[in-house]
Every structure is written in C-alpha cells, then in structure tokens.
Length: 113
Image (tube, rainbow, N blue to C red; front, side):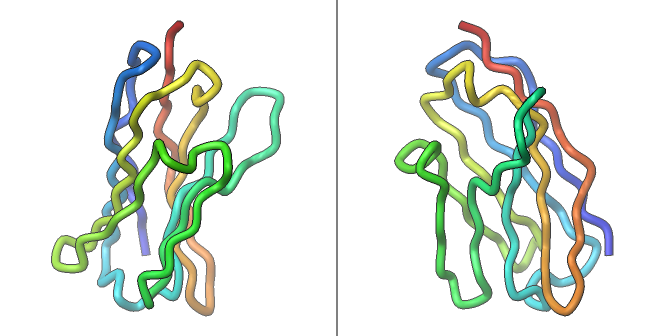
C-alpha cells in the first residue's frame, strides 16, 4: 500500500490549504486514516483522524480550523486547513492503519506571518 500526500505549499497566515492523501487501494480496508505533522525541533503530532465508522477526532491545536474528510470512491482522505497560523508550519504526513500501519511521504506546509 502506498499513500501519496499532496497539496502543501506556502501560504500567508489566515489562509487556507487542502491536503490530499491518495491510497493505492481501497481506503475502506483501513480502520483509521489521518494526519500527523512534524515541525522542526518538535515531536510528531497527531492532528486529525477518521475511523471506518466515521468517528473523527482532532488535536486541540487544530480544532475548529481543520477538517478531515474522505472520499471512498476516490480512495482519498483530505485535510482542509483554514485560518492557518505560522505555528502550523510543518511537514504533514498521512497514515492508514488496519492490522498494519502505513505512512506516506510528507508534504511541506509553510505559513508566513
């Protein structure tokens, strides 16, 4: 299984970006999918996840600003990021989990002040 994250880039504070994570097989096979981020000098942070039963959780740091969703037909999970802040600058990774855990290559998000 491969997960391909895309959609990162440079944006001004207050702006928006949408990240996509495309899987090479049906995402219905995963119990959980979501997003981590890793900023320089900081620990990896789980910021959003969605279960196969559509239970969604967010980190407090992004609650109310980020929205995770999925398109089963497209085998893709999305992360809509709004009201971005400089502290959201990080490499964002998508992951998927069933009996195994999969992690995609990251996509860089840079928020300028």
